Every structure is written in structure tokens, then in C-alpha cells.
Image 1 (tube, rainbow, N blue to C red):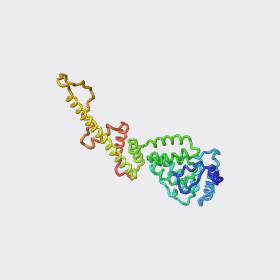
Image 2: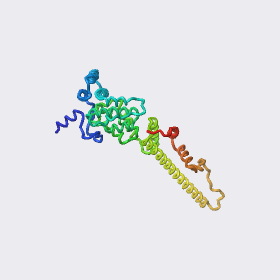
Image 3: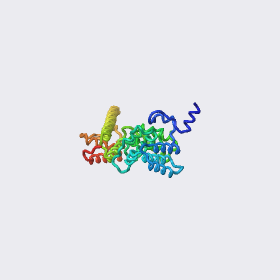
Image 4: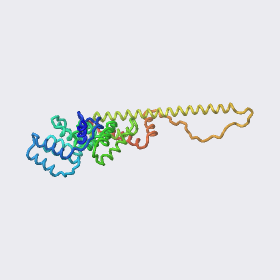
Length: 347
């Protein structure tokens, strides 16, 4: 048994049954797949594919012959997916969809083809998911990433990094922290560019508080991103409704705080009045002095915290008074952008 476990860890993986068993990531180490293994599995599939031709086999051979011996995991992943595309026209069509500047990325049926080997399917899905995250289609990226069989990945560091980027931008705190922990603690040979940004995202998510001003502002930015991608469907509307609800809750909270402050002021005023009466009662009989002390200037607080009668004016005054300028500007810009959105624009 000890020999078997040692062999497993030398290979760099502890294989777990079931797709994307991220919850068990702490029990295994994700390492880049060795170049020889990537090459062998790629050749096995591309050369035996029913649609393979002499020309496609020669093209695959040319790709790999030009590859340097010290190619990193990212390069191996790119070459492997390019090889898949040479052998399968469906994969080639999917790769064409991954072009920056498009308003939509169609996910082709090949991504859900259960007949594809796990090695091919996992690395094709990871490739498309990475592109979706880079193109800021975060919902689609995270959804697709969740279907990847992580034990088959050529470049696990890239997969977990781009998955975490999507979860971070969607404010999925728990999922994002889980992906970042796997990347930073349970993945070998993570490039510095990934680990440095991952540590920043981790710190940012850890301090993110639900229903805070920071969260509301980020949700507004997310809605703007969705609208820029011509996505105003159900998910976007859900986020918009949540923003309105959070703002209402925030205003209610501020109102309650002001009411408490007013009550405290009234109690203080009553106490001061009682003390003045006590001073009058305790004046020495027969004294000709008024028994008064010099008044200090404590400012004019009359009307402090008074709320306007109209609800809209009240809300605006509350926001103007209580929110920091950068949050107030973000809210105003967000509302103006929504007002300019063309009617009937749907996903």
C-alpha cells in the first residue's frame, strides 16, 4: 500500500472519481502533465480519429516537431488543442469562435460530446473556458469550467487561475476562494504572473462583505459589463434587482442610524434641561447672583438629521450625506447608463 501511494504522488496526482472534485483538492497535488504524455495522448487520438487523413497527421507531426524541448504547460496546451482541431472539424469550428471582439461566443455541441476521450474533452473545455474569461464572458466561463475533469488537465495552473478570475468578477466569494486556494496551495509550477495576481484576488475576496457599499459598486460594474456584451437577459435583470434591493436596505439602515442619533440627542437635551432645573432648585437662598455659568459655543445643531418629506428627495439626501464621493459617483453613472440603454435589447 505504501508503495502504491508513493507511486501516485510521484506522478503528481491523486485521482478522484467524478468530474471536477474541487472539494477534495487538498488531498492531491495538481501538476503540469509531462510533455511526453501530452504528445503521446494527442498523437493516439488524432492519428486514430475517423476523420484523420494523411494530411492532418502530417500537420500534427509538424506542429510537435517544431516544439522546443523545454516548452511550458501553456504552450503544450495550445499545441494539443491545435492538434485536436486538425483532426476534428467540429473542434476546429469551436476554436474559430474564440476570437476577441465578438459580442457572443457560441459553444458548439462538441463541448458536450460524451464520446470524446476525457483527455481531449477536459483540455478543450479548459481552452474555451479560458478564452471566455479573457473575453469577460464570466458566467459562461465559470459554468463551463465547472464541467472540466481536472485530473486530465495539461495546464492546471491556467485553468484554476482563469476560473478564479471569473468567480472573483462575479463576486462568488466562497467558490473564488476555493479555486484560489487550490491554485496557490495545491498546484505545482504556478507561474509568478498567476500567483501574484491570485494573492491579490484572494485578499480582495476575503475582505468583501455582503450588502456593503463595495459589493454594490462591484455589482453595478458587473451590470455595465453585461450590457456592453449585449446581455440584458434574466441574469442581468436579477443583478439589477439585487442592486435596488441592497440600496433600499442601505437607505433603511442609514435612516435607523439617524433616528437613533436623534433619540440620543433628545435624551441628552432632556437631561440637560433636568440639570438646569436642579441648578435652579439648589440656588442658595438669599443669593443675589444668578447662579449661571458662561455659555460655550457648541454649534448650531437645530434640525440636524431632519429628513425631507418626499421619499425620493429623502433617499437622495441620504446618499449625498452618507456615501463617500466615489460611491455616489458610481451610483449616478450607473443610473445614467441604465437610462440610456435602448429599449427591448435582450440577450
